[in-house]
Image (cartoon, rainbow, N blue to C red; front, side, top):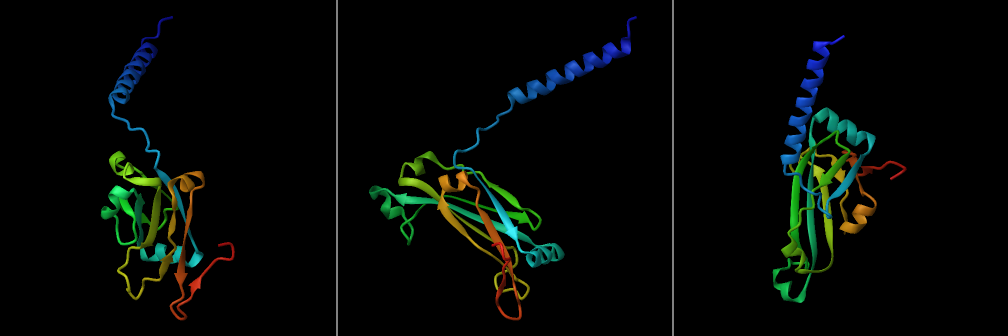
Length: 172
């Protein structure tokens, strides 16, 4: 027996799938950069509680750089690095993984010797020196290749306000 409702459902789903496929085919999807990096954060229990209760966030400041070729040493900074890209963004205090796009300019890459490197700084979003700025995060520096082989973990700790010492987990 012919079921018109079933045929209508099938035709509707077929039309919807055609529309969705057409939208995806026409989209300008980008191929991920070979310099994109994933990182993880690790917070001590006290640091987690502090971020959760204050509602504060963490800021990622990532700097891609390289050693300049001789023709480009005049463009290097004070520590002889040629800046390739900077990425800055805020993370929720609950975020444990983050991604750097690594969209480096090929013309800038041609100005360096060897592999591109990256420096990652992670810090609390409170003003430096604020009385309740008690979260301290480590930095990470290395080549992009190293970071892509094994996603680095950046540890954040809670500074004990009485002693000025950091609370560090035994497994850090």
